[in-house]
Image (cartoon, rainbow, N blue to C red; front, side, top):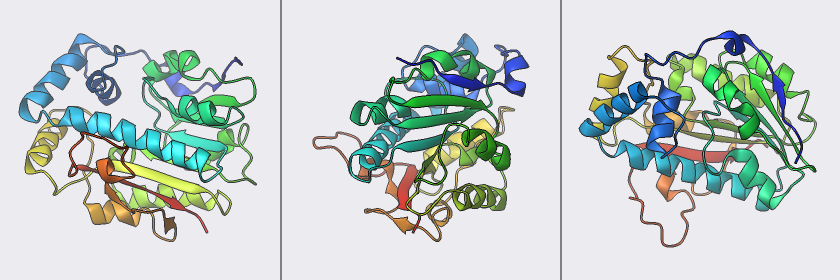
Length: 271
């Protein structure tokens, strides 16, 4: 197994604050992970007391990403991934899914959370044939992300851009659209965009729970309408079945997840 490459940044010098709940650690808790603190478990439990379905959303989101990556590697032949907003490591990280199918796959992870950086070596352990790298950067600075990603990825060949539950952290919708456009403009034809985010207007209980969370003082996460999520793919060719609840995107046989869920996503190819 080859060692990961890390690009240090400001998060490397930040202290992990264990007194305030953090969305990445709460998400890890809902996924069944252990990289969290009592404050995160308390916040996660408070959320599930209002909306228990958030655990299903978190786990369905992860399953959607796994199916996306499997399609991209096994059917679309993609061998490069740029995964922004990596979050804390759990089962079936992007490089694990991709390199099981094609060991030569190259993956760049991007996050700016100091706890994720602390776990980067465990997250990034690559096959000898492939490569992984971790960029300590922010989705709000796409030019910096692209500059550092180019040290590992070949932007003359197709790249799959993964934006899983990250655009909701960009409060301004026009800015979120602009970030996606800037990133995709830098990628060659034949590249792909994978987006999934919490969707507003599907489940009123989810809407209320997220609004209450956003008003609690924690870093907000903005739910967006299905039309807004779909617009992230403007100018691209959507892969069937389009933008749908994540549980409806090419579900595995025998899946017990609900068909309608407040989390929508899709996958599209750059022509």
